[in-house]
Amino acid sequence: MPIQWTISHPTRLVVAVCKGAITRQNIEAYLDAVVVADTLTYRKIFDMTQATANLPDDDMMALGARIRAYATVSDLGPLAIVATTPDSYERAHLFAALAEAMRPLKIFRELHLARRWLDTQAPSG
Image (tube, rainbow, N blue to C red; front, side):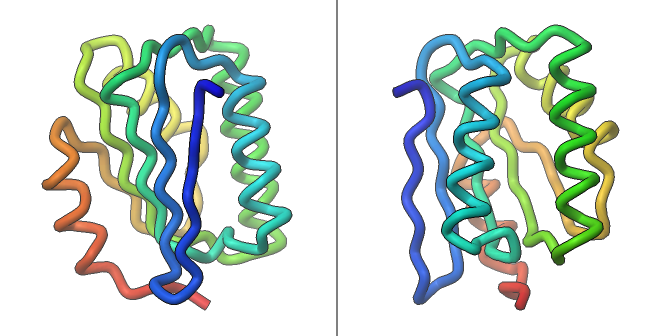
């Protein structure tokens, strides 16, 4: 599976690790799992360091709309995106702009910096 995730209920943290080519359908499956697990308010790390983003602009717009819709029905927890390639870093910034919601969101090039920042964010909910 291109995106594997773990959920820690005690620490209210979701860690998603992407590998290989990631598509909109992969991200939507991950988002569905987050919703079903009732973890929208949890802190999240989305690690794209081992992935390539196969996400054209129309897919990015659809993902952004989906996140904005979630924000109308639930609080969203802080999100740290880790992206190391120029393309994934650009896609992450586009996502941040299109998925604007009332929650902390930062993009990092190094996983340990993302985790350090996320650890300073209080879990929501």
